Image 1 (cartoon, helix red, strand yellow):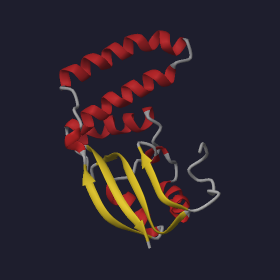
Image 2 (cartoon, one colour):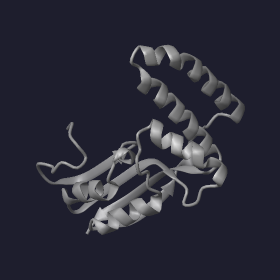
Image 3 (cartoon, one colour):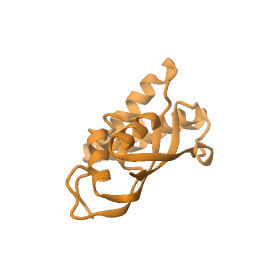
Amino acid sequence: MHASYDAPLPRRFNLVFGIESLIHSAAPAATIANLAGSLCQGGRFIVVDDMPAESIAPQYAADLAGFKRMWRCPVLPTDGQWAQHLEAAGCTVEDVRDLSALMSPRPEAEVVAELAAVARRRRWRDLLGLRMVADAQVGGLLLERLTREGASRYMMIIARKR
């Protein structure tokens, strides 16, 4: 189904999952409430995504802000905030797993070199109307750095509708 996260859903479901998608919501609490509202009692809600650590070292604040801007993630909740939204929406969080060990971010030297390459290509891409391509690439590279340094984690949250 192709629709807004916040549009009422036409029926009830046993499973709602958001994999690398819900972080783009401008109103995560409202999005979770809407989606959880379509769950049958006992249904599962699974969120898998990149989430910032609860506290970020100051040297990574600019990278986090850049990632949010480039990937159009205006709020970017932590796993604790997602869990609070799920609980408020009538779900019980059953499991929170850090899947970051499954990621393979590149060494810093490679990230820096690729950021420079994207910047060089960006000039002509922007002229061709392909700004979002470069934005996505830069955001991904910043995310690699944030993940490697522990400022962001790849998390899975599993909840059940009460």
